[in-house]
Length: 148
Image (cartoon, rainbow, N blue to C red; front, side):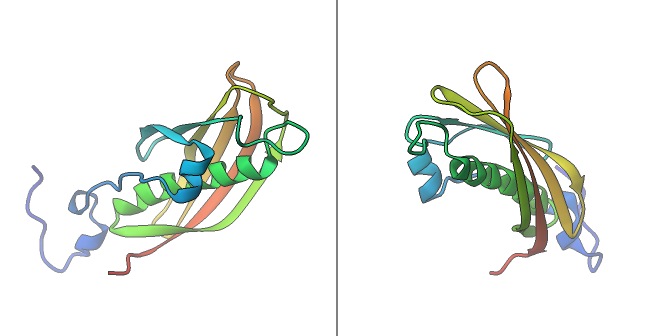
């Protein structure tokens, strides 16, 4: 247990003052078959099946990659934000698709590039079962006070 916090010292910004936010899947995440493997400030890891997330040519849909990558990167930002008594909203995302997938499962890993008090930036890497990089994303989130 941590020591009591002094009054009027910005308790909302003290890391011991808040519980880490726990990931809860949204409707789209459920439909896409997303599963959470790890969740911490340092790393968020999830998986998603290719089946059910393919485009008309039988390849993993680029939009599915962006949707799951944005979710995992945003979850990572919200976990960090929760240590400051804040939440996060996405303000920028970009992606480069390196190769395609037709089957199996992909792994999505978000790691911090910058964890600030106002902005976070995460690299999100999507790999196939052989560990080959399919997509590299960068997502920036704005940290905001939570609305009650």
